[in-house]
Length: 252
Image: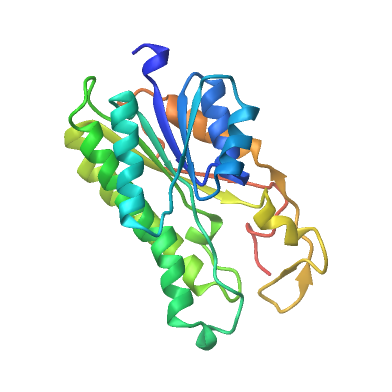
């Protein structure tokens, strides 16, 4: 496959892990469709990468029509899709479990679970009919796919569900040479995790609040690029990339 034909889509590409992954993919030869709600942030990501290796497309992962338009644009522009990184996500306010509203719950489910489901369906439709056939889908899981933080029922539930989506779609993708894997991320240094090092820090399971170590988001971007670069007869089903000293492995 020629380098010019390696096409990737990254959702939530304007900041944080999405930006890091998009840049890593561009730097390893992919042309990357940068998807997100804010065009200015997508354009900033594009400027940080090699010239001519990206396309900015505004898309809202809570709107099925917007998702469909994104993949229609990919197919019309490039005629194929080799990699999808389902990265866009959000959390709900950290409130007592019984006080989380249905609207807050549904907003997280729509973004973190239904959005990746719909993106994966569109990717399947393109990948199974293209030549060469097949492709790779990588889902952004989280340490929350394994263990929750306090007051995170919506986010944790969706990330556990992403693991199920990863496994089910990987199984169903076999007949089309589509490989699906998941990267579980812990404490990448992004705007979403600034609270871990600023102010009082992060609430712990024992009720205390502490600062937590973080890692450069580039480590996650490089992991995604590694997964994306594998031949389709090999797959990383799950990979955990985490800050070495974060309080996850152990008791407390």
